[in-house]
Length: 190
Image (cartoon, rainbow, N blue to C red; front, side):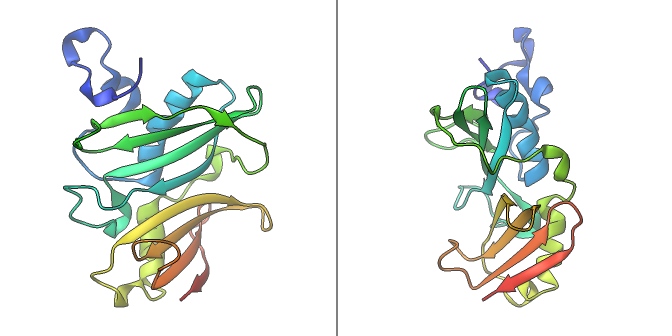
């Protein structure tokens, strides 16, 4: 019912664009884009909590290549301890040949609890994480696409933005970690 939120017409009586707060055909930061799947995930399971969020790459029409902390696609995965399951969600800010803009979900899967986090820890959006990463070497990689991964770091007990300069984590020219609660620089890898 809540899939493809932007495709629902405003006159239908069920304008999910208003429910999810989705502004279509634009890039968004991770926190704003993840807020829309949070609502959808809670319709799936009332105890749903995210355990990862990542930006999409190579989305047609996403000319900024993740620069500035914004992108046209975000993928998140949510876990339910009650259901012992996880559910992936995708937020698209534009139409693609095989998907419409808005929120859509994937297939329910098994999940072992452990790394899900409370969204209250997410106080710093990907645009601020990008600004921090720029100050720690990212400014020297002006034409490089940027990807974002948000996940709970169990060893340090904190929520971390991984700002990746490159087309994948494995081939990154630079990776900068930023605390998603405080906005503080944590470390960088080359």
